[in-house]
Length: 325
Image (cartoon, rainbow, N blue to C red; front, side, top):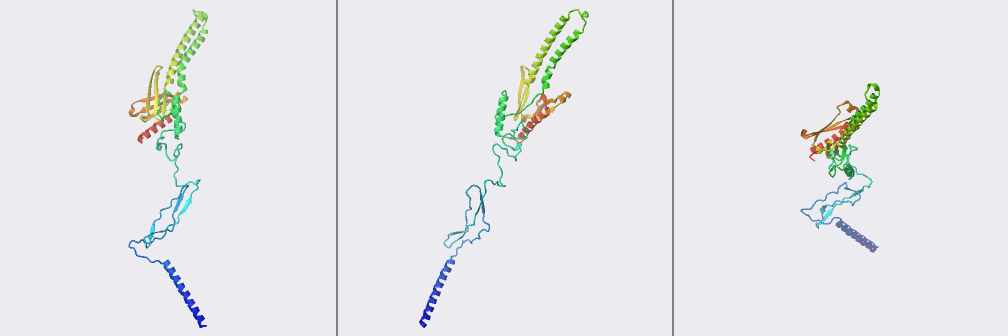
């Protein structure tokens, strides 16, 4: 009996010893011996809010970890925070991103005078918008084909060809029509004169009147054609760079000029007669810098509407020159 009690006590003591050894081993692992380092860095607590890396259709970029402490052997210890990666779908537009204009689409946030390279490429059909590069090239090619007698710069195109009123052509034929009407009235008047009051036959008188009337009408028609030809040869063409003007005085005499828009200091239009207001025509004047010369283009149809386009191009050129560009 006593032997059994002793065996139990020995067994219990052995178990207690083994348990104590196991506990010591655990304590050693939990608290390893450390040495003091003069430059040892105190561990820093990890960030409470992990950084968020937003990527869109590309490999996420994770920040490079920095050591927060060192072991007894000098090995760095890192506190790697959790990185949350948010995938942005392709069809979701980032509200903070700035939209970039395409090659053929102007930036809606810029004004025409802020556009570089196309700032003066105004649409002739819609002056409130600018031409795209393709439209600019098309307008240039059309201008070259339509006005082969002008020499255009690479990006130059016609904005307006100032039209003249049809009354300017009609007035040239008023003299011819007047001569013809006078000859007809003379025929009618002679027919009412009694034969006994004239000393020649009516046939002779009518033949003479007819011949004189025909010659006068033919002469006035030739003069009217020359005036009309000369009138038609005058033109005033405004491009996005220059003013082309021809002053034709006779069928054989003319004077061509091209003036840079930046040289135009003032432009105006005038309707000074009642017929001009009734028929809606007038004159457009261009005055160069320093009052060097004034160019007047008469018989312009709808002068107010055409003047607005001309004046718009002159003001745009002045603004471009003021910016030093």
